[in-house]
Image 1 (spheres, rainbow, N blue to C red):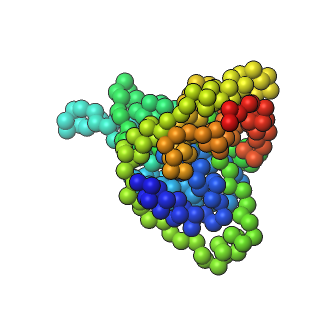
Image 2: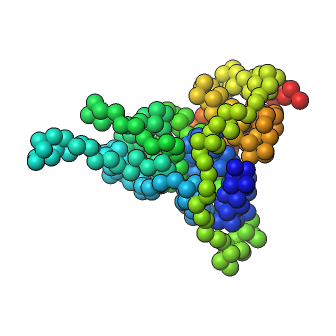
Image 3: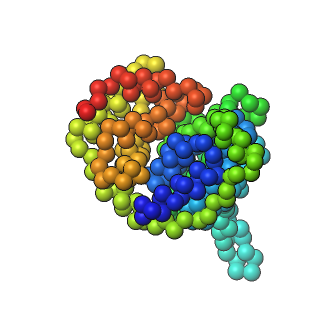
Length: 295
């Protein structure tokens, strides 16, 4: 299992050159069973990373380009009447794949964005009073452009809170961009990852009382900070899952404070400051700096 994870990470690093930390955080988010939001300006590799992640997971996936005329039924599917059988049948939409690539999610209307809420939280879709389960595992990997760009609108807090992590790629360094221009990027191949086994391995990662109290101290500090939104119980669960997944990627069977610190900004900043650009992470880093670490 560790070998397959390492191989997947190495492949992703060959696709997105010079972004080892972002790649590891993105992989950590999916190993934790979460949904990933990639926010940055156009052309820096958001869709490239999203495609590479989807292909490397070895799961069925579908890319949907979000536009202002996208309808909820374009995602979820719809029920159609069959005159021959005199019955309605369900035609599933692209959301019924294990990985949904939602490209430029903040270019769609709020109504279309909200079609993802039930799917991301409960892994099911309700249409005309009928509930349809989604395949397992189910991941949403979404990209969005900065809000100041034309044609974008902010994701509501309820939508943002369902994304386990929000990451930014930034510009590549000179050496990585040179390698990219020389065509040194590689294609990614599907990995033989057993997702049921991975999920079980994450759940088996242990956390001591002291380290768990440190996590709770960080969460509670956000609830007494008047400058930010408070972290919800969903956020604290996401933080714990990602810390365990990070420990697993480090080939450890227990969580350390370093694991929490490694994932804290990516997990919490879009919840603390929903409309703040991803590169401005002052409040999240302030909470890390002012909360006493047990070790």
